[in-house]
Image (tube, rainbow, N blue to C red; front, top):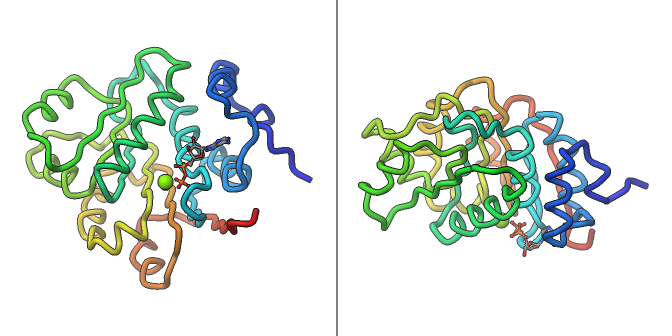
Length: 212
Ligand code: ADP
Ligand code: MG
């Protein structure tokens, strides 16, 4: 029987204390199965239903490796919609409270480019955004993804359904080859398996059923 306490994970004490303070003590099934692999830097395809706690799994993966002293962008999370990007950014900021000065920037459409470009000039450790807007910044040279060590594709099935995979391909090419890629999805149909094969390096695959 595997223990499901966050405290069993090799995480910095300050991060564990913050998780505890936020009421996160016991891992959900997807967290218990994915976090040991994520912390070992494996690429991952994680399939689990909505509400299973996928955000916290990749948020911990991103934050435990982040170097606050390096203001280059170290992690990029792609989401299908602005609402989801805002939710993910909010959760990352809550969990990042253990470490000072971690900047999480959201980049989505429907917001003027100017302030986003200004924020990018100041630097952001983590960027959360929609593929269209990230690509827009790439075409203007306002974003530098050359320091990304962790790339997350959140709700990948929805992004595929919205036709975002062409943009995603371009974004992946702008990230270093040496990186960890984590793909989270409620479903993982064959066409997506084909489309995402180029993004992932020997990925571990997990599927967690709602009952777990
Ligand atoms: P998903 O992305 O899988 O749809 P979320 O990451 O949005 O799910 O999480 C759903 C809810 O579960 C959130 O309100 C989150 O705060 C809560 N949650 C996640 N992990 C835990 C945990 N280990 N213990 C308690 N609540 C959790
Ligand atoms: Mg989610």
